[in-house]
Each structure stands twice: as structure tokens, then as C-alpha cells.
Length: 227
Ligand code: NI
Image 1 (tube, rainbow, N blue to C red):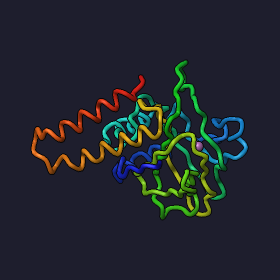
Image 2: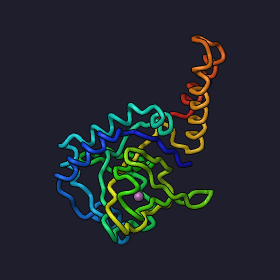
Image 3: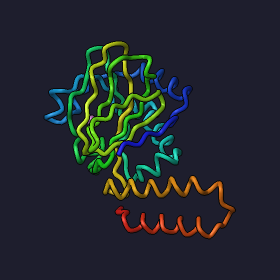
């Protein structure tokens, strides 16, 4: 299941972030790809230490934790911290699956990648091509969102970024180890939470039905959560 979250970053936050990114060093993106991905990955990535030192990683993580829809959909336990990439004309990332387990930068800890996320930092009118295509059970889904919007998708999905044919596509991407490893269980919890959130404004404070539903949600989460 694909889930989008709009306006994780406001327009002025995107502008400030991109101004900082423009000053940082960029490297060949193939350097961080696995052995299969390397052959099909043609883009640039900002230097990871430079992005962290500039506060960009912490800023995005802070905004994600303050986005209720993201938290409800991903149920994040741990993050592989955000990286930043850039596709110029002719650049592309062919079909690949992201690595299942990644070592945190500068640490011994491993993160299991349950969910992949792309946070778009370019507006769609800034470039042609550069579409994120994700293979799903229901066919190929094409994703191209506004700057500041995010897509979450199961990390076991085959996906690709089509060649950019005009302009430049800048994005942040990262992975999440979820409290709930199973994609269907996580999706069901998300649906239940959405329904509870939709009911909440219509019901009086302390409404027993809402309390019961909230109890069901947390008890299901307790059943499925692994820390
Ligand atoms: Ni990927």
C-alpha cells in the first residue's frame, strides 16, 4: 500500500532546506548502492556527514515526528536517517529493491527497512520525467508529488526513478523500521486510526464508543508491536 502525506514541510521550509543543500558537497550516488543497484543508479547524493552537520537530518526527523498521519501510517521504531539526492537531465535509477537491513552511519546498529520513503523537494513543474514508479499488487503506481509531500511504500517493492528529461529533481529519501513489521497489520491499524480520527470531532469528550475503539486500537498495536 502506498500512503502519501501532504505538506510534511511547508513551502518556506523546502526553500530554506534547498538553499542549504545547494551549498553542500555532492557525490556520485552509486557509491551507496548495493552491488545490483550500482549498475542502474545514476544520480548525485549530498555528502551524508555534511547534511547531518548542517542540521538537515534532524530537521526532517523532527517534522516527521510532528506529522500525525506519518506516525500513524509508519508507526516508526527506528529510522535510517534521511539522505538527499538529485537527478539532472539524463539521470535515472533503474528497477531495484532496497536493501533489507542497513547499518546506521558511523554505528554498529542495524535497521530493518520495513518502509521506504521519498520526500519530494522539487515541485512537479521544475522537471519532466523523474517519476517514482512502484510495482504493487495492483500494477505500477506512478508517483510525482508536490515539494514538501511524502510517499511511503513497502520497502520490499520493486521500484525505479524514470530518467529526468528537463530540469532537476531533488528529493530526500530514507527508511523506517516499523513497530509493526507486517504490512497488512500496519495498514489495518492505520485504517482503524483514520476512522477513529474521523469520528472524534463528531463525538462528545469521553464518548464511550470512542473510548472503546481507542482501546481496541491500542490493544491491537500491543499485539503486533515488537520493539
Ligand atoms: Ni530505492
